[in-house]
Structure formats: structure tokens, C-alpha cells
Image (spheres, rainbow, N blue to C red):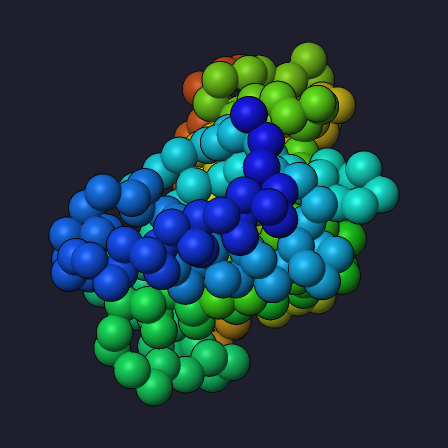
Length: 260
């Protein structure tokens, strides 16, 4: 099923009518949680400004966000990531990665405001990673709780995650991944912060790094701890599938560009 600007207008009209009849709390219980009034207004704006032409179904659904397959006016495949504003479950976790990162400030502790900062943070991190040659979904735009980026996959079918699909040349795949971690650290001054087989896609037998909301600047007080965790995750996974991996100290030194 697809929907475009006419459906957005129709949904907005329905929301306006129903808001006059019932309380907001009752209303939001009857509408899919991701499509609240503010989100629909944001989607309307993105469609009206040409970033999105048509949206299709959900291709990934989690506790923090829904990802929809979409296309722009030129037929380019897009992933539209809509962060849920109706849940505060991850608010504390998000703040851990935002506070201490000098690039972003939280002026309010309201869930929606924090999620808006989180969306901008992921867009910024993707932009920096993409700019230094790390293979990530190319970021297109961000507005409110909606992030538009390149779709990684074919005809609406997303590329598999590393946890579900082992590449043909695992040694080469591992080396490319480690090079990406190094580029993030040395060139983009970022640490992914949650890098594992769950946040790496396999596309054309090459790695694509995703989920950059929690990525932090090197000045963040947790940057070193997160880097160690990221590298440990990679070493353990690839060692388990037969790759001859370096030890943690050697891998850390290489990522940081430290001569031994």
C-alpha cells in the first residue's frame, strides 16, 4: 500500500474533526502511534517540498522508530525513519548520548523535544560519516522526528543485517569495517557507540553502517568506553566465524592511528 499527499491531507482532516469530539489522550489511542498530528504535518511539508513523492509500507519496526520505504519525484528509493514521540521509554538512554556532546543541547526534557534533537543528531552523524567515505545511507533531510535518507536494498526489500547474512569474503568484509571505524575516529572524530552485527547491513557483499543516533563526538566523556565496546563487538563476532582478528589493544591502536 502506498500513500501520498492526498492521504496526508485526508488524515489531517480526520484528525482535526476528531479532535473536536474527543480528548487528545483518547484520540491518540485510536491512531497508529507513529502518525500523530505533528508527524503528519511534518510529512505533509516534506511531500509538499519535494523530498518525498510516495510512501509505501513499513520495512522495519522497533521500539524507537518505524522505517518506511518511499520514493522521491525522480524515483529514487528512500528510507523514511519516523521516531516515535508517544513513548518515553528511551528518553533517559538518549540523554546519555546527547549530554556531553558539545554539538547538541537539550533545552527541554520533554520527550518530543529530546527526540527532535536525536533525529538531528543522527542526521549530522550520518552526514559526517558519509563525508569521510564511510558507507552509510546517504542522509537527505531531517525535520522534527522524521529523517529521510537513502534506502539500502532493492525494490523496497532492505539489505540483510550482518547477523542474518554472512558475506562471501568475511576477511575482506572485516578489514573494510575496521577501516570505516578508523575513518570515523580519525577523520570524522566520531565513535558509532553501538556497532555490532545488528547495526551493519550487507549490501553487494559490502558493509553499510546504520543507526547513528547514539554516535558521539570524541570529546564526549564516554567516547573511549564506547569505542572499546564497538571494537570488542566486531572482534568477537568475526573471531567466532573464523576470521583471524587482532587483539583488542592492537585493534585500538590501529583505529586511533597510533604507531606501535
